[in-house]
Length: 167
Image (cartoon, rainbow, N blue to C red; front, side, top):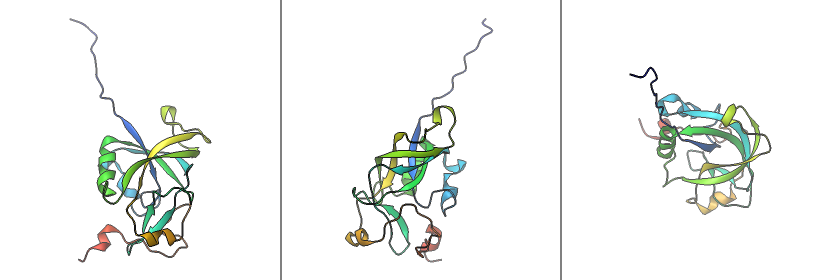
């Protein structure tokens, strides 16, 4: 009989997500990034390398990153998420009908990560982002934003999912 035993820990694959709207810290849906839906760890603030328009649209004042490269610049947050959180985010974001999960290059601005999760300021990393190619043409005429804030000076109150359906 051996006095040594082997303990096997499952490998947890983590994904990087760029969160630019209501899921950011201090925004109406930030609570969705809690342990009940999986694991999500803030890594850093970053900006998009490619330019994309971030607009607020629909009667619910939802932030959308339009997958139309060329205009706009977005500053937001990178999270490390596990498979469970990734599946939750896909459902929450209506992927692939409302949003599509696409790769984006980001320049790291700062970071809180430790060890293997450390992202160095100035480094370029690839993450996924929920963007949309399905939008109304007039959305391209909407003002663009560098950073979304539900309580920003745009005056467009975000209508939560709970408040969208009749009671």
